[in-house]
Length: 299
Image 1 (tube, one colour):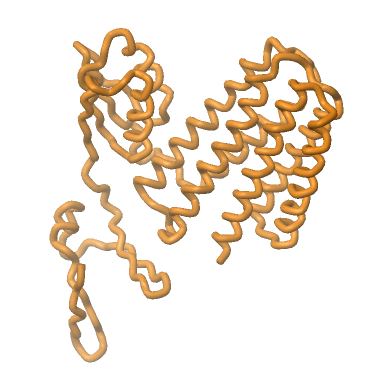
Image 2 (tube, one colour):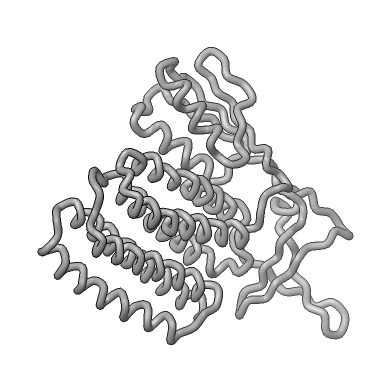
């Protein structure tokens, strides 16, 4: 969309705002807008909330195995009111429980194969930065508590412990939703942050799979490697919020050494320990991916 610059007075230059945009946000003469400058881009944002986004999805031809995926992407894409039609009775309870696990979403009506959902978070929504930091802290706590779990050798509790990843996933979805609805304050970094969130989710998933698939206790040497990986994750979090080029380089070098060490140990360990070592190597890779993206945010 192009706009001509109009000269007013001796030195003031103005452009007109698109009428479709001002009508959508209910703006009129005298209202204030927020103006930000970023290189050659002028970003104009209104304080007023845009119209609630609504969507209706017919689940009649959606296979049961991907219904949750549909609902997940409706949620993270920022829809405020959702109507699900032709919800079969056999999947109704499962879908209802899934919806109720989403931050802000609540079912307001459920009758005759129709589920209506509304977002009640409204102005209570946390900022993107708050949610992102919470995701980091949830992952660190999950990983740290895993050390005690491994040392306890209570195999029967491993799968239940792995479900702590569900909380991480819940806040990941909420963070992506916030980013899609509002964007990042520096819009050019929105895509980078989107990728950071997905990398953190993948990292947490590896810890969850480690415990979910573990069928017997592991050797003390493997637990030591686990502790090293957790320490690396702590440092990843620290340097993400306190950028340090030397620290990032050291962590990447540690990852390289760890990769070689794991390859050597896997040839000497029991198959159960090898499962853990494989997951730890993937955690280290995802952590380095996050650090590389952090460099991108600095440029």
